[in-house]
Image (cartoon, rainbow, N blue to C red; front, side, top):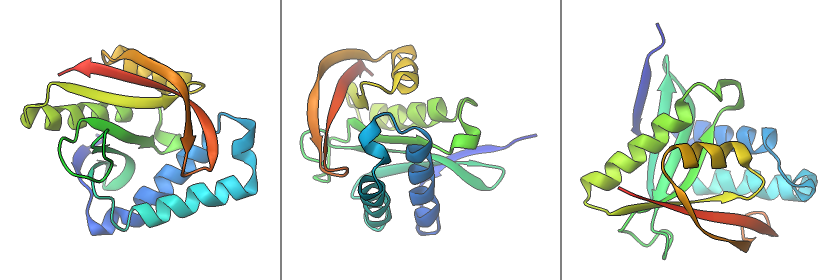
Length: 168
């Protein structure tokens, strides 16, 4: 029987969290520009640096003792600036474990934490081409509130995005 555990990221998780994010990003590159080796290097470097001091709430999903996914919540208006942590800034699932409810479990844990803090809404952004993630968020009750292009500081590229919200 598979045992699933959701918990706050520990120091021991940091390398695994970076590896999960990068492997998921590689497996789900949505735009031709993302195949550029310089963009790949920026994505990997950002994840490796970010896990050292994320300045937000990070939830890790562990299956049978092994980290397989993670999500983070942050302040939408001022990332890394503290409460309210009403924005799901990241949701990554290791490619070989996708489609098993891990993303939903992480998302639900993040929203439970928001509810416990008395927050009234949750927000999340997604690349417009990421239809699989978009479908998950809509099934979880999120609705589109904005669509446009934002500059991704991480990738150094303009990125078509969708902002979604849902009441808690």
